Length: 139
Ligand SMILES: [Zn+2]
Ligand SMILES: [Zn+2]
Image 1 (cartoon, rainbow, N blue to C red):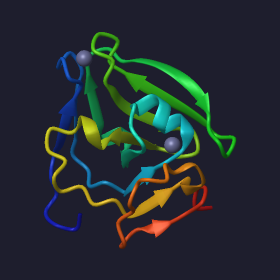
Image 2: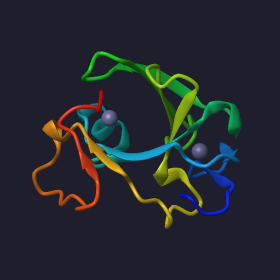
Image 3: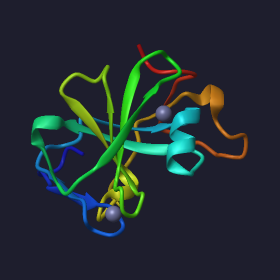
């Protein structure tokens, strides 16, 4: 963030789905909601929010809809061959999509700015000290 612009590249585990994005992330956060836990198979998911018109996806994603804890509809996309969750589209994020940090080729630079939906956080997770903390989503 804030350095020279980087091209974000990534994809699913079997590489049938690949993406690239030429824009800086608008926001990076950890979501601890139950749907993200379920979908990710992990105690939380790290979302890298980018402008959707800068995100180019090659390959076929399958998807389904969930209704989030705050009532918003979230479209969740994964590779139908290997099952890797790749992209999430919360309808509330106009013009934006969330790349799963776990699907980036290099996620070593990712620094989440927020932790959200802490009301369903797993009790054994230690949060980073520098993030903004929200019980649900920031309004
Ligand atoms: Zn795949
Ligand atoms: Zn979530």
